[in-house]
Amino acid sequence: MQIGVLGTGVTGLTIGSKLIQLGHEVMLGSRDEANPPAVAWAKDQGQHALYGTFKNAAVFGEIIFNCTLGSVSLEVLQQAGAENLKDKVLIDTSNPLDRSTDMWTLTVCNTDSLGEQIQRAFPETKVIKTLNTVNANVMVDPAKLLEKTHVFVSGNDIEAKATVVRILRDWFGWREIIDLGNIASARSVEMYVLLWHTLRNAISSQRFNIKVVTS
Amino acid sequence: MQIGVLGTGVTGLTIGSKLIQLGHEVMLGSRDEANPPAVAWAKDQGQHALYGTFKNAAVFGEIIFNCTLGSVSLEVLQQAGAENLKDKVLIDTSNPLDRSTDMWTLTVCNTDSLGEQIQRAFPETKVIKTLNTVNANVMVDPAKLLEKTHVFVSGNDIEAKATVVRILRDWFGWREIIDLGNIASARSVEMYVLLWHTLRNAISSQRFNIKVVTS
Image (cartoon, rainbow over all chains, first blue to last red; front, top):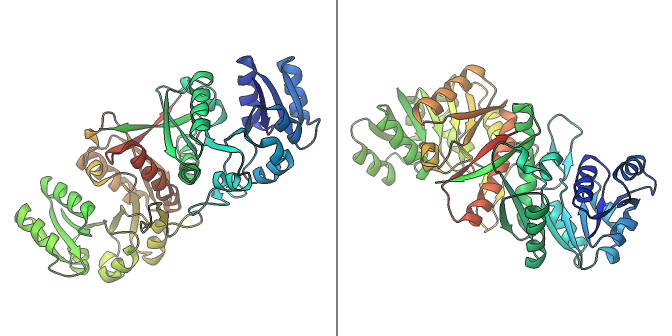
């Protein structure tokens, strides 16, 4: 499958590499066509690994991953172009974080979320929020953790959500996937990220996740 | 030990009953001295179970549990009286929830928390935020869940936090307790409660909790 990955930070590179391993054709999109990390990544990953602008990656991808920082996601998606995202599944892994101080805060929360903002700005795109609750290494390899843990999906389009559940399960190895509901439930997973951050500091590791345990 | 429990909702009654079982003397505090649920509870629980006003319960308790709704916690604590809470450990289980719509929101979040507001309003009280991430039944009996799960503590006073950790472990049976840091970390556990709520709806149960799984 042809997949567009927006963002060339750790998340974009990690997801891009995993998708290449799985045999897909991946184009990493960035602000500048020849973004150095993307160029280096493509050289390293072989012929199925491509790079280009956000727009190029959006045109290329049958499915799009948003792996940009939440603070720039809306602007990046505008650059990618609504017409190039139309009718496509957009897997939104971003968090609306302000990390300028030790105490992280969110730039939108409580009565709205970045997932909802993106869905409102791109009404013809099928936005599914997921994977934002874990570090990039855990996203693509949850089996590295000592036990099975949970990942969440939020989105309005039922078919798109089913597609993303298959991707999480069959491509990335997630076994425990909870459908939280429509895109408004993105609020809850974005707000969880502050607990993720205090936990990261408390346990001095980014390689962890939560497991929902019932009675 | 003499313990004051502020609030006569499910959380106050459940914690009060558990403390009685453990052999403590418990006074439930409410707005009116003869609050019907508190009167019925005391009758049911025997001679060590008492009831009174918020102020009575604060005077009575060597340790105080705040089990009131977050929306009224500050006002209740003012009624209890700063002089009666002075130098005491206040175990704050409350959440600043607005539950007036299906989609819960918080009345304070992101750059502040109810835990911090209480600590600022009562600087001579040792506020420890904990247990707000689980339902009342799980608070006092975490062993009911299928696996050991985590509970969190946030607070500025190290000794008070150690006291609360002992209470959680020795009285309530918690085995996995994570110290998240000072009272500002209450933001993260209060904001998590929206994920608790979407999970509750998704799995149709209130009897669950999260376990932090590492690699």
